[in-house]
Image 1: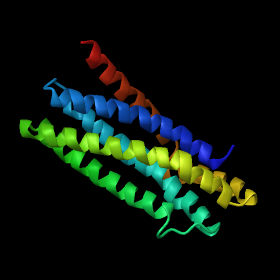
Image 2: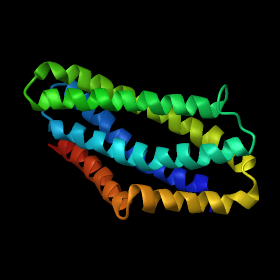
Image 3: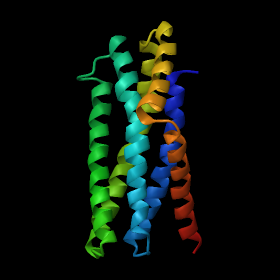
Length: 188
């Protein structure tokens, strides 16, 4: 197994949340009643799983191994991915802020909340596509075969030492709960 296979698997989990987030934003825009906490939970998932675990592996391990393998950070695909990670963080902060305002009773926050959620989802869908189809194959070629085991080991260190035991599983469960919540709204 390549380290990039782990990241691709995590992408599938993130895409499930992106789908739920997009559907929730659409419902919010059409005036349906949604729990503002849904968006706060989605922001927590993004911060702690997509960014805190997944992007930490990319930024702290994979991108460094790619750079050591000769892929430039500035002016190349790694720089683009890092910039998009920052843009995603900005969307997440905006989504959290608008969700908190909506939760406090400010109905005017519905539109900025939907826009931030949609913006994040749109950004991440194309970001994931670029990583899966361009960056990860490049990583598999750039990182010497002798280093692949070390990258996998470093991923494990991120999971256990930096993220913490059981955190990954907690956010997998939250991802499923978010998807289930939106699906239940559709059936009402």
